[in-house]
Length: 253
Image 1 (spheres, rainbow, N blue to C red):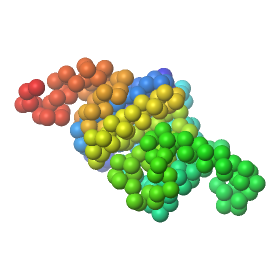
Image 2: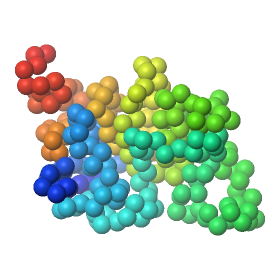
Image 3: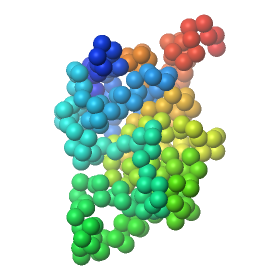
Image 4: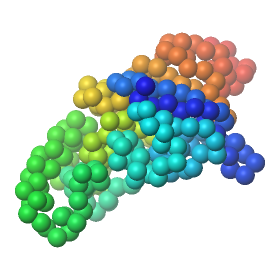
């Protein structure tokens, strides 16, 4: 199992944002973590990536306990992520945003960049080539020379994904990748995420938009910080607990 959370709990004062949450992600899967707004999905991501410390429970990645590791340590193990609020460099071009992210990879050196060393100059063309390949994979090849701040919202979201891909993750966590997108952008994003799995990347997606179900091998549903069910997309879609969590207990489908 590539990733496993075991009885994961996060308390904020007297409030349990996540409670006894357990899930598994196997290598090569696309797994959806869905639930209504405020259900605890992003908190789970922040716990996995070390942004927040867990109150109790364990996080195991590739057989290694990473529960107490810091974000940079988690990233060095091959876990990449995106954020709901996209941390882009607005005055950099699209291409520059991606090339800069290559130096977040654990085997890259920012020192060589700042001092323009021979090793950096030798790799610069290679890095640009790889960055353009990533942009093509997420549908942004034609926007490479555009400033990030001038992109449409959906394209900014995909640029965030491209930056995460530049860190060469083995496991990629996507936080609300479809939020605010129009139907055309959603379809393009779904196609791009499928392509990630084809390139050997395991994907865990947080979403409240149930369109993500069409993409997933398995789906885990969280509500009020607790897992309420998991299973195949068609099973989850028909689950009465899931319907109640999204639409209320009086909803009739």
